[in-house]
Structure formats: structure tokens, C-alpha cells
Image (cartoon, rainbow, N blue to C red; front, side, top):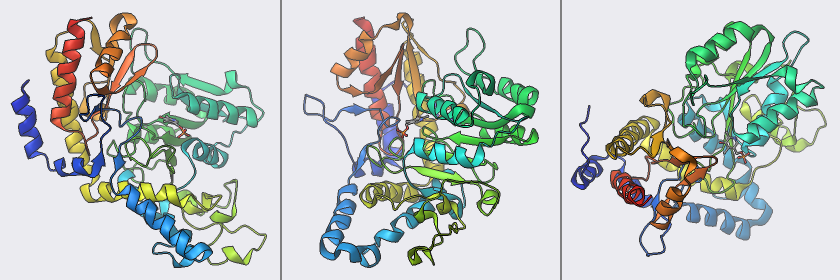
Length: 424
Ligand SMILES: *Cc1c(COP(=O)(O)O)cnc(C)c1O
């Protein structure tokens, strides 16, 4: 255990010892109005741009320019197969086998595609279990799927709520609910890490408990991928979906990720919404009208993917693969712990951290609740060069992204927060 100190020297010492410190220089930091780098702590919302993204995108533009349609097969990285290497690199980030992961579409689209295959309500088993305070897009997606099957939302949706007076969920409560209601639950669909509270769920135990009761278990890893230590294959998760523009730095609207467990890939009984890009590669261009799915997660692809967007993702995945999730998680715990230590050091009655304090129950994000819903504190830190985000009704989310944030960033942030609190 490292003994944290509330000094600039300590933060600098941590930065000097940081094996990931060298990656900071591989990203662009936005500037504050004073011309200095902003204190960017918003990688949970939009990750920073890897410097290599531009040259990777230019490579695609140049090959398209020089080769036109021939670029599909003759580009330096042929457009038709551009996604394959990315799926493999992404698999390492989420703890999956390479045939279980594909990069395609966007997150909510993938969630729908997965529910088409994995939400198969029957007379007895038709409910979906979700968090009451899940990200709205997930709420819309599951409710619209329930209606798509002609079912009633009130009777078919079970929402997990914290105990009265509490903000985060207790694993025991989740497991108990699965035990009690599991027989009627078709699908358990939770966020791996709640975007608002920063709470990470015990996905291994939830998956095991769900399977015990015969439920299908999927996760939305928008805030989990590239952030938490994931073992999707070993945990036996049925499917997962995530975006890549948050912790994985692929740029606004970047192409998303999708995981289908190996044991489902060759199942003939799973329906899916099919498209030509999911068709067997050997015969795809023969233009036959019978769909033969690729025997990997790629079999769920619909369309040929946006290569320009994938080029930006490639720049980021290079860094992820070089650094490795193990080192990233190690630093994440150290730097998030440091942020927590410094905030506690302020001993302020005006703020409160709602994110769990156990390192395995969170990632690189602390959600700071303003007592009395005081948004002015957020405005004050923003004026002073902090880029973070405000979530209604009363939370500032601070995310020290381990690939590019420094301990000094965290120190600077807390000094700014302290000053703002003293003027509140
Ligand atoms: C960010 C986020 C989304 C966004 O969905 P897109 O389809 O990428 O626009 C959805 N769900 C969760 C849980 C998120 O955190």
C-alpha cells in the first residue's frame, strides 16, 4: 500500500514512477482560455484524441484517393478486412477470445441486435431485469424491445433500485432478486459500471446467478470497456456491447464493440437480423440469396463498416494493446484512490463522493454529489480550466483516465476545487 500525501511533490513523484506516464504525450489535450492545457477529467464521456489518429485516417483517405474501389482489397490495410485486426485487439481489452468480438455500428444499435438474438420471451419467461437508473438509451432500448414483442412494459420490466436512503446497489440485493424472480426473467441486462454513480457490478457473480436460474445475461459496458478488468469469456457472459469513444478514445460517435460468447456463435436456433456483411466471407461476393453467417461474432454484422472511424479506433487500440489492461487497471486504482484521498482531505461538508470506496467496485471515476444541488461549484471549476461533467440533478463526474491523466492533474483539480469551495 502506498501512503498518499497531499503535496505537489508527492503527485510529481507518483508521475515519475508511473510506467504509463509516457502515453500522456501520445494524446492531444484541449487548451483552457489561458492558453494552458485544460485539466481534462472527462475521458468517461469523450476520450482524448490519440495523436496517431490523424495519420491513420490519412492513410485511409490516401488509399481511397489512389486506389478507389481497389482499396477494398489492395489498400495498405484493405477496407474489406480493416475491422478484423481491431476485433482481435479489442478482445484483449475485454477479456474475450478473438472470435467473440466484433467492432461494428454504434452501441445502442448493437444492444438492439443482441436483444433480437438473446431476448426471446416465452409465456413463462419474458421479463427483463435492468437498473432503474440505467442510462436512458438502455431504458429506451429494452422498453421498445418489450413492446416489439407485444408485451406490456409494466409487467415485463423489473428495475433494480437502491435501498431507501442509499445511492448504489448492493450485490446481495441483486442476487436475491435474481433468486426470487429468476424463473420469469428472460434477460438480465445491466450496465457493467453505472454512468452516474460510478459503481461497478460484480459481473461474474451476477452472470453465474442468472445462469443458475436459466436467464440470459448481457452487459452494457459503455463505461466498463477500457476501464475495468473484464473477463467476459471466463465469466460466461452471454453478450456485451460497448461504445469506444469514452475510455477507448475512438472519437465522437466512434464505431462500437460487441461480444457474443463462443458457445452461442454457431447456434442455429438463435434468430438474428442479418445483413450481407455477416455472411460467410468465402461466398459473400457471390451474391447468393441464402444467408450463411460467419462463424464468429462477425456473423452479426450488417453492413460494411466506416473505415475512417475505425482508423481512429486503431490508433487508440494500439496504445491499449501496448500498455495492457493489467497496467491500466493498476494505475487506475492508484490514481482514483489518490483523487479520493485528496477530496477527503478537503473535509468539506458541501460535497460527498457517492461512488463506492472499494477499488473493485469502481473504475476511474468518482461522482461527487453537491449537497444542496449547487451547480455553481461546477461552473467555478470549469472557469478555472477543469473539463469534467455535470449530471443532473446534483453530480460532478471526475474521471482520471489512466492512459493520459497524471497524478498532477488530479492534484491540480483538487486545488481548484478547494478554491471554488472556499468561495461557495
Ligand atoms: C454512453 C452510453 C450510451 C450511448 O449510446 P450510443 O448508442 O453510443 O449513442 C448508451 N448507454 C450507456 C450505458 C452509455 O453510457
